[in-house]
Image 1 (tube, one colour):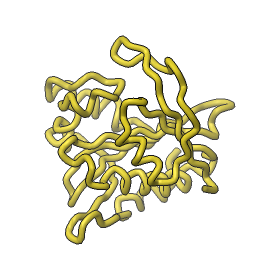
Image 2: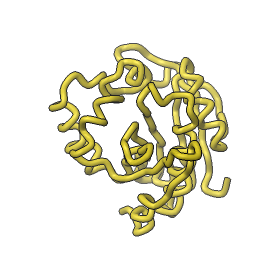
Image 3: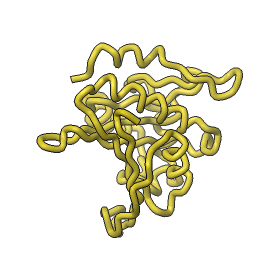
Length: 184
């Protein structure tokens, strides 16, 4: 269950440039056209488990079936416009002390520090929203150095390479495991 502090997340803002404000908020159906900008981009989906969305109907279904019911799934907004998403997926049972971070932003916003600021915001919020969480981890494809740099800038520790860790679009992939602990 998400605590009341998550409602304060909408008010959490970090400035990217003097005029740019980055915020995290819940994603809703009115965001579907913006959502298609990154979920419909082959460059973005290249390192993701999902295939590039080809239709607005697929995006609507994803928002309804996945994003809205997800326990911690937010839009990354630049000046109020959604340009990506960030989520934390919980583990259960004996692993409930861990969560997995995932994030994407539209490729035209890569390299501008936006993902780094969004991840920083998410890390600050998730350890408050989920006080049982002790470890937040992220797995990144070995061929995605940009995403690895984002995590390192936020303070995630690189734990090593896990070989043939998951199946991505029909091929087994090596990943780099990163983590940050609630006390870091």
